[in-house]
Image (cartoon, rainbow, N blue to C red; front, side, top):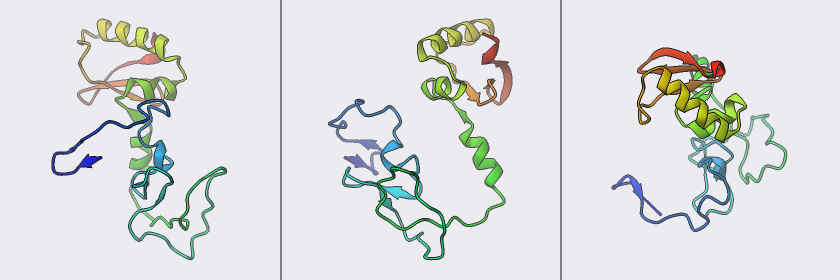
Length: 143
């Protein structure tokens, strides 16, 4: 159960982390347009469906709503850039194709060589570039 007023969950997920560490998997990695209030199946949130949409759901999809027609946007490039970067080391390891344990060792080495503390928040990009405070400081493929 989530409390918007407190901005936090009031109880833990009964399943815990057995399903996946990806917190958006419950809605097919589309939390902006889909919801799953019952915890059973993702469905459209809001009134975004369009009968003229030709988009087909992904194979094996459990969505019970109509396809979503996305409006054209001049910001599509920035959305792709956001999707191609993360500050989560678990996602970064997957994105860059490394085993998580191996990637953890790489992070420690990279942070030590760049005089960063363990709690300094970096952003990894899909080409391996590492940014700290908006400045490219390294590339993870060097480790």
